Length: 388
Ligand code: GLA
Image 1 (cartoon, protein in one colour):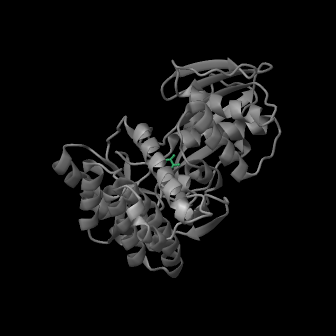
Image 2: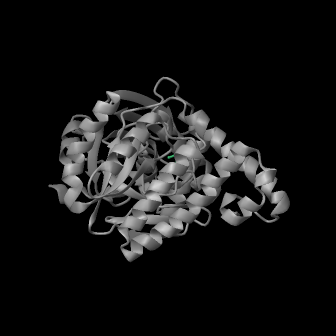
Image 3: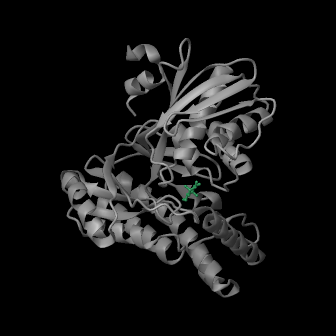
């Protein structure tokens, strides 16, 4: 986001000493619905972010101002309640709550923030807000906390305070993203390894414009189906703790034990984990056709076995795949609307962006946002003196 514009917007409000933090949204290249199965993911942080200015407040008092919706909320760190009126504030309240609970002693703060990660589009605007808030509160209280730990705390804020059972991918990549790279993350050990985005390719995001309310309940249902699969399979595969531990051959061997729907959910997760590991090999070898094939296979598995796509995502993916220079296209994020990600040869990217929007409008009557994104750095404090 444009920093100077943000500073101009907040200048009337935050006079004196404030510090500025940024945290990005993300696009996941492959590895969908694998993080909460202890599996592998391959996301990149993107050049859409939350900017958050914070200055020390009075004692333990926190004031929050969300510029984009002109919302205000205030609370004391000694009594952090859930705010039903200003629901956006619960991401920040939740962060304070889990940090205090984990024995970080925070100080009060006045906070103003804005962002350009489209809300509810599957690009992790909420994780970006949590991570920006965590970094701000920890920095103001003079704590230096390792990135994976910040990610874990932010995930806990969302799980325990906001009430979404998300995995750790979004918060992790928002903290630890690297410019020009995607990160292979092992969501069990939290080990990670950067993989450069091949020079000849562009990552193009397509926002279907569809936002569906059922995402949360469907997401939790998928998690429960995965857990049900593990509960059955561990009787014949002792020692497994998650679908991460199940090989495709083992799943096939015990298919008869599983209800059909549970089997299909498991087949997605088990095959998707294998695809992520194949994808990083293809990336390292510069084999873009193979990488694209894996993205396509991921979408087909999410649509068929995992049943988290929707007609608009399928339409956008189909249109994308028909364009010249496209290696692969799939839905990204939790599904049921939101965005697609396409890998497009650099020289075709501009024509792709121009062609896909009108074709999607003809097919659906909706107006999508199509844009090339850059893999960006994870969250950080922005040094203000560099700006003047
Ligand atoms: C959402 C969740 C993530 C992950 C994806 C699906 O973005 O927040 O933890 O589970 O869905 O891959």
